Length: 347
Image (spheres, one colour):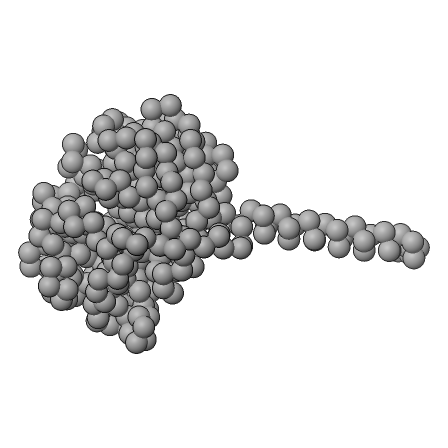
């Protein structure tokens, strides 16, 4: 028999449901931090706008060889890598047949470029001089970011949804091993001081430290105040890591000596790619919202110097440590065509 509820009980239940829904919504808003941060003028001056080939689809990572003055840009939507000569601001070539390319990393010492073909679950090795694809190696599910370990001569790919790191021989492409992270993989970086690998485990809000010889996690560092740590770059000389939390638009400073979070700053919504200029000690944080945040590293503490909307789709940044120019590939420039925006530090 079905029991009928009294009007008072129905009202109480309905009120409780409304309160619960409202609390959940507020919780999500507080977690994500949907309001953009206070705007501060960016200390950047436009230098050039370089027309890029292809359609207006999404770009992803970019990587610069400062010795050869070559910038490599992953054009995800076109499944190709675009090579740009940043001295002449001209496109050198496009490298095709890289399905759903996300990560791109140039290793100047090897004259090679590595790119993750995400839709094929592969990482490709490319001759930097000719643009020829030399070999392709299998990875885990959804390979994204890349890092190079010069000590072991290996390339590391973060398999985002696969929750692992695939370790590939940089010369032969042979898979050396896999490290399971226990959660979704964010970005990975090589620490030249300790000769270890650091990787974001974004669904656990922690930073994992990996011994690249044993392929074993030696430390898991919780990241309090971080929602979904995705972006990662290092300032090795100062023993700092910078972590971008795309779930709540925070940038954390991590002391790699004490393994503590020493700073937290608000950045644009959905921060993605970070770039650090070690000579100038400038940090750039590019967000999916098109906002860019700039900060200076003073005595191992970050001071935000600018925070504003740069351009729609400006979630990728690369920086030249010799000229201090920063580069932002965007799908829609001022004329509606895809372009590479070039900026110089300055008021």
